[in-house]
Image (cartoon, rainbow, N blue to C red; front, top):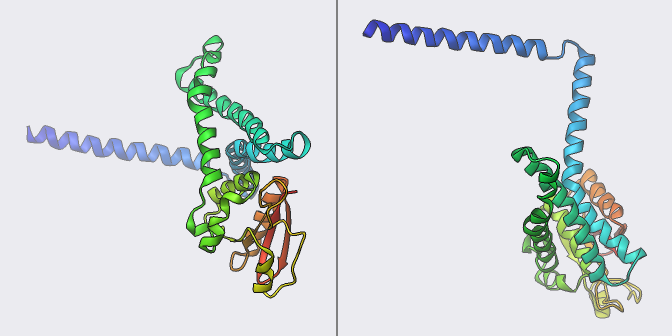
Amino acid sequence: MDGIAVKLERLKREARREWKRKWRQKLRKAAPANAAEWRALAGEVGIALLKIALIIALPFGVLVRGSVFIYEHGTRSVWLAVLTAGILTAGVVTAYAVWIARKFTSRGGRGGRALVMPLAKWVALPLVVFYCGYSLVYLASVNAKSAPVRAYYRSVHPLLRLALSTLILVDHDMLITDSGRLPEDYARMGLPTNSRTRHYKQADGWIHAVDLRTTGRGFMKNRGVQFYFWLMGFDTRRHVGTADHLHVELH
């Protein structure tokens, strides 16, 4: 019996060595043989990563950019704009969920179409409603310079809150340094009073501007944040008041 056990163990070792040898051969054959093939592989990987990033970003882009576009070009009702963009976003999430479900269940044709309403009702709509609710009411203390800045958060325009919350998902260190202001705040900061600032509550009752910290965050990160808000339909200005910061506002 001991001899059989020794032979079996030797056979297992040989099988493992053979398996490793074959995989090494396959990897050597699959590996690029020259610089041109390496560049081609890098390009394919880059395109694949870009596609994944776009797929992930699409629902958030539809929600934020869609809300701003509808608000500026369709209705001046902020809640109608959010509702409309939310429905469109739920449609995108539903399409994703149906595609994933069909991959796992192999249900196509009518079977795939039968998944649409259940997934929209129980997956897409709850996700969109939860995300909108979370974005509109909550700001972590680490993303606000001070308690007063955080206290002003619910007075900031809802579309700007949606954009800020979405940015925080990928930029956890983003810091709001200023939001709402009163005329006397300018004297306290040693600045001339600005009667047209959107840091005041506007006619619709919302604050339309926030300032974001730029110090110590790097050129590329600051440019990326500025590009994001521009892409989402907001006006941005990099300037110095009491300190270097990025001013973001909604018209």
